[in-house]
Image (cartoon, rainbow, N blue to C red):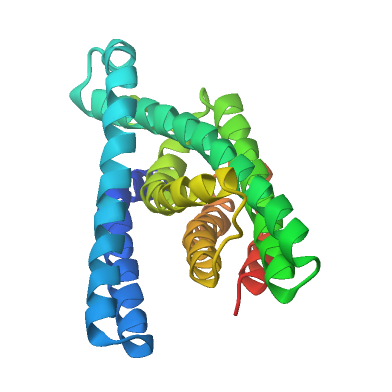
Length: 259
């Protein structure tokens, strides 16, 4: 029972923890920018970044909750606590599926940008940098899809708490979704400007390349948190042993994204 309660506590507090982590990330980013740029520019960048995070998360949550609401109520009938958990899991699946779809649209924009900058600049350092970022982008998208497939394959795996069946994937989704939503939201906002430049056959700027790097760092931070969570729990939740993430690949992405 102690193991089960520990898992449920993770589920219950993970949303608040993720929100706190996202807030800490935003504050750290603002401080870093302030040290590197003029005070006015740093303040504007920090405000825009925080607004982009909030807007991206609100947009994804609103659409996903609408899509999943009726299914969640039906699946969780008969138990208030069970309803809360089931509703959270179903909304998490809807949001994850929506984010993966958006991610591959974003992926296509940056692949096109890579072709354009290569045609303009040959094999310059900027070209090599974008090629590296696009490869990380592709690999992260593949990883998201693998995680989605794993979650779908384990939807019926549960533990019990006082007679309530709790999906083992509920902790994964709550730990994973909030920072991922923020990271993909930033990438989406950047890709809109890049897509306009693609249509005009213009290369990405240095500022945009750096923004892309920082967006990918944000997404990789999510994978780091998730890998740590799985590593801590797989000894007591056997099904987590097959979860498709490991420390080496997360560290490889982190290394590729260092300045």
